Image 1 (cartoon, helix red, strand yellow):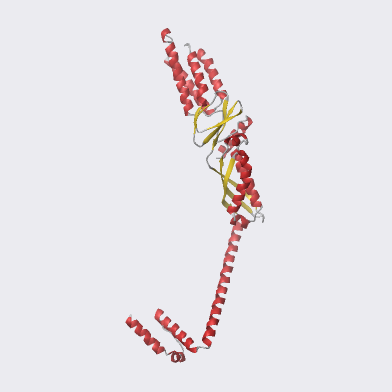
Image 2: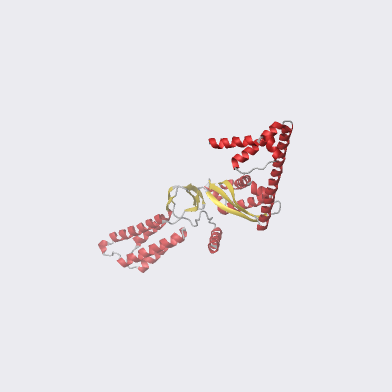
Length: 364
């Protein structure tokens, strides 16, 4: 993976040195594709057919070996154009065709060379643009127009493609490593930015690599947001901070024809030692809250008992009835043995209570 990234950086530096911005993986004056290859093959067949038809009366029909060699050469040129899609490559290929065909073959293949040259000029400029793509076309180095979607035909040698821009909503992953919060806590934050290109012309012509520019701008805004807030704010107000970062980056990218739709925090990592300390602090806080609630409950229960004692103090009959009810409920629900003082039995008339309980059980 590291080698692939290094190679990508080398390609970008080479293209930047030649003045060709890298947009959506494109580099070159055009994009040689399957349709271009088919047009080139059709030009080869047409050239060989015209050459054969015009020379039938003089007996100079090209040999099959010659035709096979010419076809192999054209296929080789198509492969080169896939790798090096530049008008300079087309000119060199056409020049080689005119220079080598009269020398390598005894038969006059000027008609084949002319048709192949025409095919080399037309084939690279034919392309079908996808629904979600926009293509920025330059003519003689200056902005000409934005094309897409649908078929595209470039003016040979004069038109070039500055970039293929995907106008769908895209997501970019960016991060801030070992950034310090306002309370000097080192954190590692991963975030996502959802964005789209609404003006391909500006995106291609105003900034060299808008994808990298978005990542760097988002990282800068994220680091600034981390440094301006405490860890507790960073953990508890992700949505608000995401909106702030989105507004900052959007203000920077709007002149480039790019809109930042949203920024979302994906993960916030803190050092393991601090994570353990925060866990212990949270556990202690929960235990403290539990003890406070328990004490408050005890106070409420004691207050209720005090009010009940005040009510029973001047009404002994009510207290006796309450005691009898408690004993009855205990016997009825648990069916166990209840021990009470003897004087309490006489005062509460427990025999009547037990008799009532037995009668109740019998009727059930």
